[in-house]
Amino acid sequence: ETTTQFNVGIDLGLYQNRVTLNLDYYNKQTKDLLLARPLPGSSGYSSVTENIGKVENKGVEFNLTTINIDKELNWTTTINLSANRNKVKKLYNGEPIDDIGRGSNRVMEGEPIGVFYNYKWLGIDPSTGDVVYADPNKNGEVDSGDRMVVGDPHPDLIGGITNVLNYKGFDLSAFLQFSYGNDVFNGSRLYLESLTGGDNQVEDVTQRWQKPGDITFIPRATSDATATANNRRSSSRFIEDGSYLRIKNITLGYTLNKEWTSKFKVENLRIYFSAQNLYTFTAYTGLDPEVNYAGDDNTIIGTDFFTYPQSRSYNLGVNLKF
Image (cartoon, rainbow, N blue to C red; front, side, top):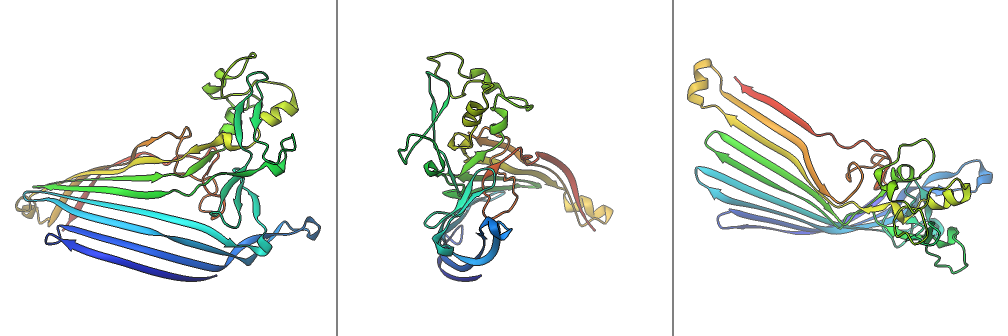
């Protein structure tokens, strides 16, 4: 792979550097991108990794640090924001890499890497209780030609806010992290709202369609294999807004007075308590919007499939320096 990058930025310090601002614009062009090129089944292989792609990443990064109070109480705030726009510009013969992962991610020209390419869910037919899907090719049936871009796992904006306060021997820091505008495919719901199989079902299935005229978002329960397969089809029904604001870390500490610690030949003694992943504000119905069942895969993005959430943890510690 070969990457060419252009950057331009500005650094500002105002009010005797009580306010510092960093703004950077970048444009990164990568060619000969390593991707899995599909192969015909007769070859005995499904794909081969080759230098077949060209992708563009461009965006802005913003960082603002302010010293709000600089007296006996010291209070500093840092805000960082990042907006990246990703686009696939070229693939082998223009052919997309399709149906990747459980969320049907796709790599295709003109779109960000790993967009969700699937059937568009229109709701539940109140007369039958079956799911209705869009039919953009107008052939009167739901087939592969009706699939379309139904979501984007890439956020419009990510960032964080950090506040640090110091007062006499006490110190307090709080870090908030956020993501805005990204979609998540909640693959767990394919099973937990299926009304079939051996999986436990979520409470939402109690609102399933039961008689003509019912207005709901859960299809009918049925033993008909064809109807069941249609109603639990992977589609935009399971794509949710993955935006969130998370209290990522809070730490409270106290450093003992050096006049007292020096009596015990201790240069520095600090006691602290910290909490990670304390709380997440989100409309996402899964366990954690900041997950991906495929790890750091660069094409299977934004997919949750019974993925274990990030743990909430508490720590009590001592920093001791002789």
